[in-house]
Image (cartoon, rainbow, N blue to C red; front, side):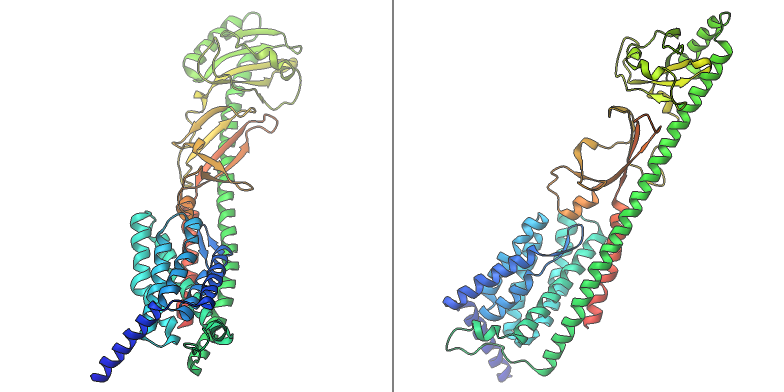
Length: 465
């Protein structure tokens, strides 16, 4: 009993001595050097996932604790960990990494210096992972799967850094070079078992992490390619539906014109057009018939202004219908509307103006692909039709990608990724310049990536154990 009390007293005295020790000039240089290396280690990180980075600055933090004690080592760790404020945009990782450094330093002052891995593992199990759950779930509002991924990543990252810090201290003369003159290096001797464990752990973790980073990047590319294909298929499907709607309406008008456009039946055609506009063909505004030279042969209701600007499109050309730019208002209607040009017999052209009402029966709302937004754009980028409650003006297209990200959201990268969308476009008619743009949420893709990373990270503690 008395010996236990003496051991505790001795550990407390050693802890107080370590905490109160003022580094000499060599120690100060060592701290500055390790802090600089730690910041570089955090800068040159490996991004496993959107905002999930494997950091190496903790290696320098753990070496600083070994050399200068828990207090100064923890202070160096705080400076090194401050890089996460810039990297992830929140202070929670900074707080957790600072606590990790101080806790490991305090615990190993009572235990053998070679028990750093055990102390770090205990920190993550008892303190670090619960804090991740509190900060990331309750403060940042991340879903449970994202919180689990971050907790696993940070714990594996911390253990990795401790193992490699131990290995560097063990196989290099770092302790002897940085210990003040006249003092014996603390923890410079290692048991054979500890040395073997450090070496084996290091040579298990490093290849595993390299393999994980490579396979995870491949999985990320695969999942992003999948959502890209989904978006493209939806865009093609919507463009096909729009083409069917336009062609069916134009085909109906073409057939009726061929029947009724004669000298004796033009009044009947005019009456029919009036009926179509008011009911049978919702969205039709007016039609006109031009001869091969562009002369107007028939018009009802009143001819929409502006058609003469496109005279060259009314002359003989491709048999595929041509779609002209949208007019947002004129003397016919205040609704956005557009003009379609289609071929008739004897070189004549049908010129029909429509509003977006002709697309109202289309099934392009949210379905199994969870389409967030659909927009039909004319050749000048004017919106003809849009479906979905999506503020597209608040997003920006990431360079070299089809990913839409919030503009200056200030959110952490993972939250940013979960709130992002994927967009693709498809042409309505090949020569029209008109396009359909679809927007799909990336939530499901992000969840698949997270599940893949969680499965990989969960194997690391088992292998180390």
